[in-house]
Image (cartoon, rainbow over all chains, first blue to last red; front, side, top):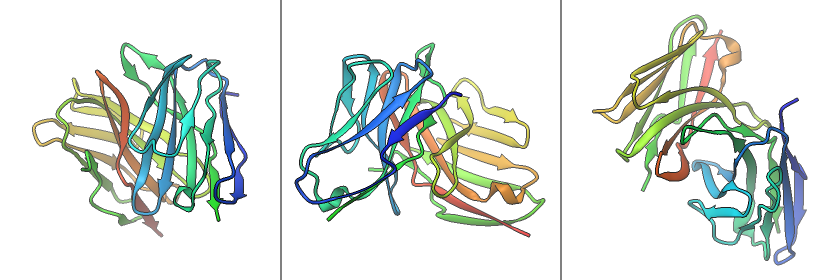
Length: 115
Length: 112
């Protein structure tokens, strides 16, 4: 079954404690990205990756890091989480076809609370 | 500066009638547009897309219309069904820019 898997689904952590949210896709997609969803702000792109070892900033990259060492995995790293990073996070992957990004497949989401 | 705007936070439509969700964009370089549907506690799922070389794309009950001169697209759902109650996101991308920009979403309520 084609899917994007995020872990954990729920996480409560304290300010400053490094954490990683994992994301894995089994569709051999080149493009992967991370989004955060906040009330009234919709989905905002944090980071994206065109392919292995190629990553770039989205609209709200501050306080986040990513890596793309393998095509299937795209972890999101918060080196020093702060309360304003409390949010619902989604990982997504999509195929690149003729230069366009086809529909993205999203993970189930990770609800992060930083206290 | 919002490049993709969904100006209606919510919309209520009677079951069986047409639902029309609107989306405006400001970046004339956008050339690919997508609609996603999101239920609570789930990730968004792809609904329908349209390339800027077209002005209409249809898939079953869902039709997306693109008006490039007005920088406006709309999603029509006919007939609306209870399962269509969800949040709908409009998204856009440009060929030479790898970012994908989402609107804030419109919550659609289908009334019995």
